[in-house]
Length: 84
Image 1 (cartoon, rainbow, N blue to C red):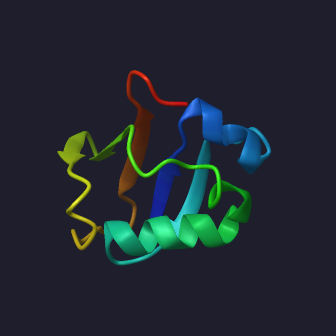
Image 2 (tube, helix red, strand yellow):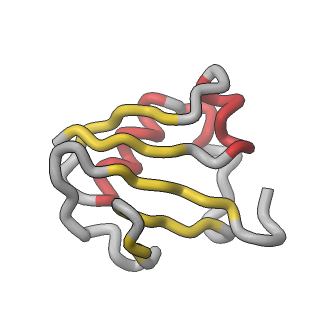
């Protein structure tokens, strides 16, 4: 499945200032893994907390990494207060 990830502003510098990145995966976790493979500079810089995830406007909790995604879904990653 191809999913578009909307990157938070602090991460955009690792994506050549792109606001989004196209990734592949059938779950949220697989999509995030693909994002880290495409943007390896993020791996050592992203804290494990301080972010919210939404798929097509619906909140996804951090423990839902096995949540399925569909082709064309949009995953929005937002920084929350006190992070980055």
